[in-house]
Structures are given as C-alpha cells and as structure tokens.
Length: 239
View 1: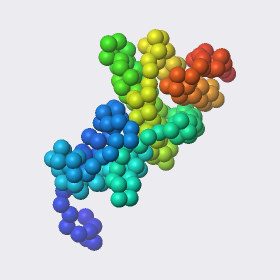
View 2: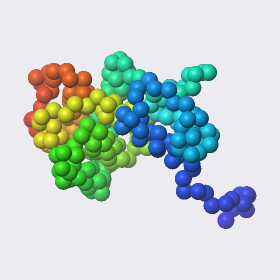
View 3: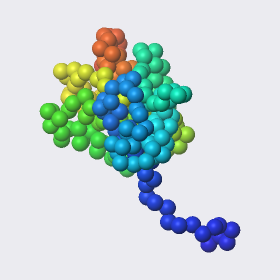
View 4: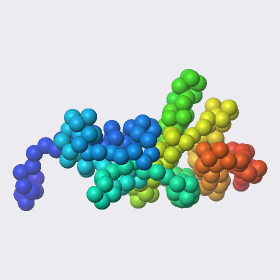
C-alpha cells in the first residue's frame, strides 16, 4: 500500500445527492413535472426528506444534463425546448450516433450484441397495453445506449450522456405512437443490430442517420420524405 496516502475510510456506495439526482431526473424525464415549472429547493428538500445541499447539487447536475435551467436570484426551472433546440439536439444526436455505429462495427463484442438484443427481446415479450410513450422512449434509449457502450469509445460515450437526458425527456413528452409502432420498432432495431453484427460500417451509418431523422420527424408529427420512410429497406439495399 502506498505510504504517501492518508488514512481513508470506506467510500459510501452512493452519495445522497446521487439518489436525489436520480429521483428528480426520473420525474422530469417522465413528464411528471411540466416544462417551465419552478423547482424550489426548500419544497423539494422537504418532500424528499433531505437537506437543501443534496438538492442544490442535484439541480446543478441536472442543468449540466440540459433538463434544468438555473437563473440568478430566481432559482431553477424545468427546461423548455424550442423547436430550434430540438432540431439542434437531434442533429447532434444523429452525428454522434452515426459515429457510434462505426465504432461499434469495429469494436463490439458478442456480449455487446447480446446486450442490445436483450432490449429488443424484452420489448417483444412486453404486452401491447404496456407500450406507452414513456415505455417506448425507455426501450429506445436503452437500445441506443447499448450502441454507445458497444463502441468502446469513452469520449464518445461521455458526449452521449450529456445529450441522453434531453433526448429521453423530449421523446417521453412528445412521442405519439403510430398504429404500426409495434412492428416498425422491432423491425428497425433488429435490422440495425444485424448491420452491426455484419460489421458493415457504411450501410450502418446510413441506416442510423435515417433512423434518427425518422424518429425526430415522427415525434414532430411531420411527413416523412419518401426516400426515408423505410430506413430498413434502404439499409437492405446498401452495399
């Protein structure tokens, strides 16, 4: 043991502010607190039965994740994403995810593929009645998170974690499930996993770009362009 280290006690498994952070994030992402609503430290601390310190720390971290805005002398409020904010968010997500797909094609292990496949299998086993917009967003985030894990690129994963909460929040609060959602979600994500397993970087990058763009447009209830309405078919034709 190094003799220059001071005597250190055993570190707690989780800091109290981490628990507060997780609770607040979950409520915001689920839409339980409306966009623009004030978050008062004293009220949150009283409700969660903690001091104001952990709440303050959690709010700072939520601001870093893009879920909360801290205003001088006015406290915190849940972020309101404008149309321009959403477009910038998804353009950045598309660029990052295309890169993650390329790295995953090169670096992913069978365990990584199994992890992504497990999310799809869980979706297939779930009951149609439980596939709410919130549940759909959770499945989607978990699957795409597995791609970043499979990329084995730490800076890229850190960049994704900065966006992830905002993407999740946007999907949960704005997603409208189309009549063919149950079929298209499984089909598109299985096709993406297939391209990753085949290590096809170019088709995988193209598919991911169309997939993310299609998801964004569907959430906005826009009409998909004819050439990107079926990203799985486009990817099947790619060489």
